[in-house]
Length: 116
Length: 109
Image (cartoon, rainbow over all chains, first blue to last red; front, side, top):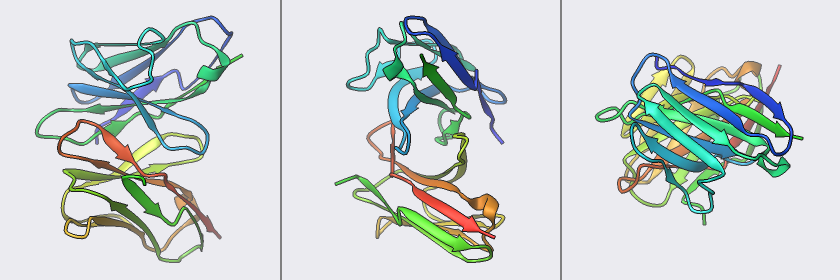
């Protein structure tokens, strides 16, 4: 089946630093990748949608300068949390979609970010 | 009112029991996903449905388009089935998935 990986799985950083999270589709090409955020005991919240080679589309309320998304290839998207603060601590999950006619989304294992 | 509603929110079962989790949505959809999230956090996609029924091992997912309702069934439940089960729908006019709030299942030996 289709596999999506994320790296790192867990990261702890100091306030003010930037953190990059990678999302890779391992055995398929992903024309679209999605980034989600999940707070404890809550459901996933879509942050942004990125299509390969174009700028990401951010959801209302998500700061594009804070959460930089790059989808430079059909198998890799990155999310950079810039100048991280403790309130950015969360579980970040990506998903990848091959593209028409396959509309299924395949989810990564997630990255737990803790900002001290 | 949420566009996607799941019931029950919490479910406790004894090993071997038959489990049903329900998902209802408000308007027509193009696809419905059932996802499983274990305590460690990673999400596994169990099924994507647009009509009918799918089966994989002990898991069965059904969808009734007219009634805007889907069910996830687990036969012969096992403690390793303990997880949060999430229903997510894709509406035709959008690229996004809309998620239900999840059903927390605990299966005891």
